[in-house]
Amino acid sequence: MISFENIELTIKTFHKHGLTKEAALWLLKVYELEHPNFTGFEFREAAKPDFILMTAEGEIGGKQIIRIPENTFEFPLVLMLNLLAHEMMHVKQKAPGVAMQDKNEREWQAYYEMLFHKEFPLIPKASVHHQKFFAEKAMIYYNRSEKEANPLRVKYENQKLEIEELIKSLG
Image (cartoon, rainbow, N blue to C red):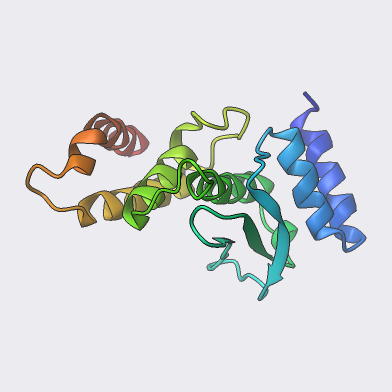
């Protein structure tokens, strides 16, 4: 694998030349995020330091695009990699044969992935600040499921305990 410093340098070069989509596609290859249900990147409004929005869009069971800000690579690369992994989880979840309908479950799984990188093990850990944020978001989606004997709560109980332990360890 290419060193993180070289990956960062390559991304800065792509960004300098206005090749944001190409940079993102290259990262999908380098970090083994590719999926056959993904059809490409499209741009959305510019991100701000306190609000960076990426979305996977397309019908559940159909092909997906990911909308990214044109200024994606003006922000820390580790954070952008985690956001890309989150959206690629949605691409997988919406693929034919999976077609996960429940948005709370999709978001729960995607935020869990941002914390533990089980689907995409090459993605680096985010900062403690962002890990806390991702953990809080995961718990919001977990808590939206009904409390009593909900199959999703039972299915993800062990992952919930992992997140609670992580939150404690982060302080």
